[in-house]
Length: 161
Image 1 (tube, rainbow, N blue to C red):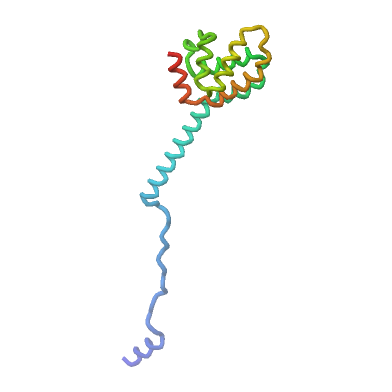
Image 2 (spheres, rainbow, N blue to C red; image 1 turned 135 degrees about the vertical axis):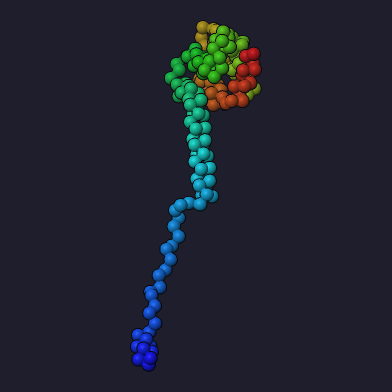
């Protein structure tokens, strides 16, 4: 027995090496992270589709603002504004508008000072020499297009009805 105790004491106890546990992985994700990812994706998709719809809806307005500089006469400006109005309202309402009705329709989206200028321009449109009003009409048309939004469209539709 002595011999056995001497050999175990010299060799030491038979221990295994210390093995560290495996570090926890980030995968699979906890359900909270899945919810955050899902909500984020839904928000991104909703925001993107809203922006795309808005850009498509106001495309004609932006196009008209670019084409405004190409207009060489007051009649061209008037036609461009009518095309924009027909796009955002209905052809049946805008198409038959003449003189006072058309002027009143355009005035809905302008300030009082601009309304007075527009009224003077529209009275001059039906005279032979109205080229002098071209620059003022360009300014008024640009302001009308710039201020065109959903609320002004509702107001304009109320004027039409």
